[in-house]
Length: 312
Image (cartoon, rainbow, N blue to C red; front, top):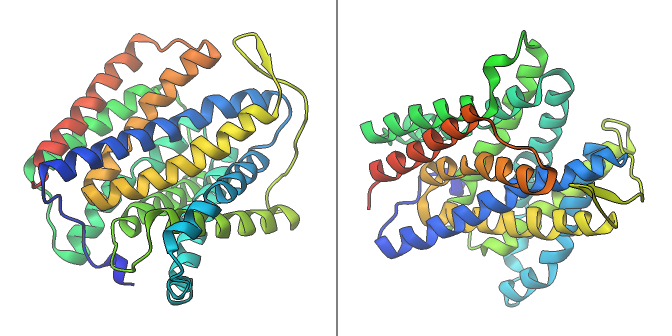
């Protein structure tokens, strides 16, 4: 697959700045999903139903912009049909399906921690496959960021874990790493919006089939969702999940990967965990404890060190 041949170098400081802006936007929009979903889960929605609505609305949102971005070059869809299918199966539907199965057997913090080891997998892939060894600063920053992630998720308070659940979580990590590696390549000619839209369409179809076959539980409810004691109509957070945490997130994530390269983009994406804590505080009133604040500082510092270790 052509898109897996190499990482994308950051060639100018301007490109780096734009890429970092896209990466932070992706982290923030992805990070909003947990808080928005919480109110709907409490109202009776199943996780799979929420994700199906999320990626389905995201696909619809990006449909027209994707058509405009193609500019009549419909052959790009035909030539890259297999690529789009793989992206949707692995990076969208596969990643979500694996995560659902993981959290049925593991504490959520453990499942997230394993999935967010994806940057380490990206570094390993680039090193093993393309001999792109990370710099010492990148390795140091990775260690600091992972230490911060451990504290933010407070995994030290978790007891024993289920081995099968760990395997499912590792599957989610592979899907996440696949997203960054594949998104970083632009030699397929697909604009980022087209790649995001195509992946979301495939993911919607696959996850919908999984629900129809009973592989994942699908249930929804039209009761209002509550956030900090304020009730809102169910469709508002559902719309937010689709437009913001799917359409905006995937497009900005692909732009970030192409500008920064898979390695740096994947580490900046760890900031999603910090944004999740912030949005949980703002929408759910869940105040972070001191150890999480310390972990957040370490996580941010680690990302900065990784950035310093990447080439200009």
